[in-house]
Image 1 (tube, rainbow, N blue to C red):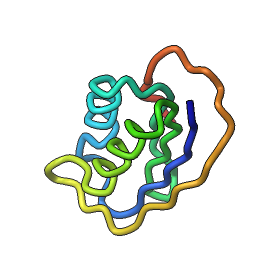
Image 2 (image 1 turned 180 degrees about the vertical axis):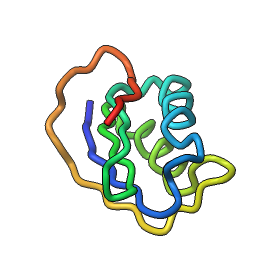
Image 3 (image 1 turned 120 degrees about the horizontal axis):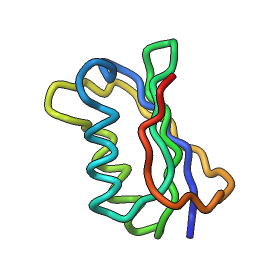
Image 4 (image 1 turned 90 degrees about the horizontal axis):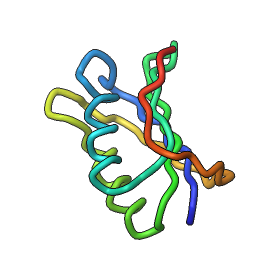
Length: 90
């Protein structure tokens, strides 16, 4: 089990990024959360099998259809053993 924090920058709010992220995370069995930040970026905490996290990260680099991902930052972080993947409100 591995945990990463992903910061996604670009046109990533108001394009169903959070809902799409949850859908992909649920399909891959990734646990954690996604939330919008006040600077216009999206923050994701993702936990799971390292191989599946790589696939999830590849999706995050593209995002949903109407998103434009300009930059992505990834940091290893502490595993918190989330039970599911949630969309958090600000």
